[in-house]
Amino acid sequence: MIKKIGILTSGGDAPGMNSAIRGVAKTAINSGIEVFGIYDGYRGLVEDRMVQLHKEDVVGIQSRGGTILGTARLPEFKQPEVREKAVQILKARGIEALVVIGGDGSYTGALRLTELGINCIGIPGTIDNDIASTDYTLGFDTAMNTIAYCLDHLRDTSSSHHRCTVVEIMGNKCGDLTLFSGVGQGADILVTPDHFMTVDQIVDKLNSYRGQGRKQTTVLVAEKMKELNVVDLAEAISQRTKYEAKWEILGRIQRGGAPSAFDRLLGATLGCYACKLLMEGKGGICVGLHNNKLCYNDIPEALQMQRDPHPTIGGMIELLNN
Ligand code: ADP
Image (tube, rainbow, N blue to C red; front, side, top):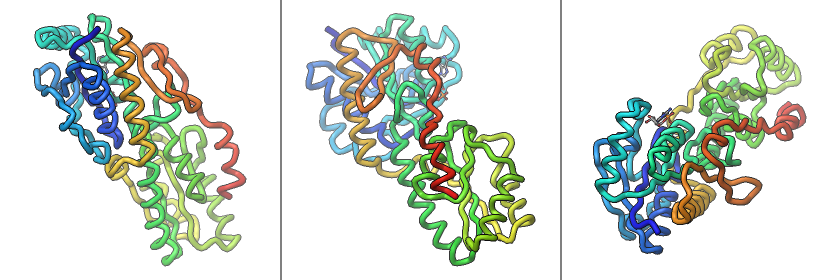
């Protein structure tokens, strides 16, 4: 039976990470295991910055955005000697296993540590929903709610001025935030890597909307598509349609805010589940939610899995968004 575990948050922050920290900490402490919160991801680990977490340290944190442990990127963690140092620090402190909350980069670090004898379990924490081994990542639902709030506000001003608003949505090459927000909010046009449209196609469609009498339009564009950016697109729309177009990049506002009820539940349950699996001696795996059930996969398998492009929802765009 393990006696001491660590927990860290790594890579991009996401609402719901605190709920997962609480889930891990409460499960560990209630099972007689000491739990150490490691600051700023793998950076804090190799700098030996950590603190023992007690129940009072995690009271109420599930309602707070961000991560109380802080997060960071440490590219040097790809070097074997840096990881060896991390293992020495953990062994000196008697920490036998780790929960790593983050994205696929953090998962790879967790796998490498497991290979060095420290069992690690990953929890998917990113607003991007770009981890194929889970239906939902922590923070995705909260980000969708934030986007809904922003789109409502933008639509108010856009409809008053009879404008077209072009909005860039985060997702790190994954179109889920744009697709789900666009379908849910009834955007007039949405463009993602899986549902791509050229500038010409977008302009044609907007001209046809204008011909139908649509006075105000919203176009959602997923970030990081080389072929399309919101600044050039808004310019093209202003020049080639009767809409005056304005662009907005929602940016990191999508990452902040109080976690939604769903993300709090997801964090709590994934945290508890990950801790229970560590107690069973498992490592090199990542937990998730699939078809409404908690699940886990080996990290290499999870990293190979292809993301579901949501063909059913994608097939509804023509009917719902036209
Ligand atoms: P995310 O976890 O959100 O995908 P990153 O890709 O930036 O974010 O990865 C977070 C951290 O995970 C990196 O800064 C690094 O410390 C660690 N990491 C990423 N890739 C590797 C790798 N191939 N080997 C070891 N550690 C890695």
